[in-house]
Length: 219
Image 1 (cartoon, rainbow, N blue to C red):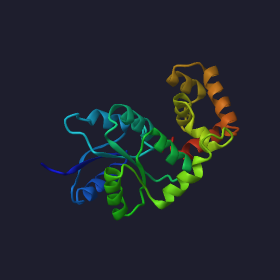
Image 2 (spheres, helix red, strand yellow):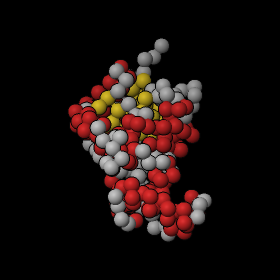
Image 3 (cartoon, helix red, strand yellow):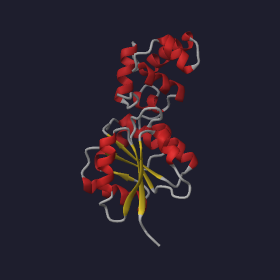
Image 4 (cartoon, rainbow, N blue to C red):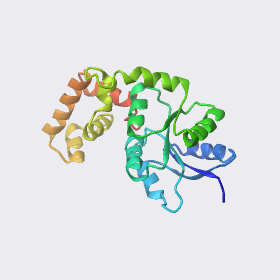
């Protein structure tokens, strides 16, 4: 019986995904099962008869991002290990992915040896975090219950508030955002005011910049 472990990649950048596939297929004992352009595409490609052991999950993806997809996996296929793969090293993004169910966090500029180590560690120990990520996590842990701290606030935002934050980064008017969310303009303005108060921001531009920093904007 083969001991080969299977990897899936969810990332919206095709060239990066294909290059990563070639690299991983060179690792002894590992093979890429499939690649997906976003969380929805990933879910559609899942086959219960041949599940990946590990998913390399980008955070910032269109249609269904890494946070939502990781939460979905935690509920539906908890045996699949998620390794977040991102360019973002902000504490908020790291902690939110961990809270969503990720077992590790690898930056996209990591070297080949670290990626291979991440696979080995998450399979044998159940988690992987390098020194930099561990330090950021530990620094942020004490802030999670602080309602005045933006790290703790971000992690506890509702799904609807996060969806609104994503839409602030688009060119849609508040009326168009309201139509997209199937709510009234007044409700959308309520989301804006509540988030500005929670995050100590003043404008839509500030909300959009906050969304970009925390990996919610699809650029």
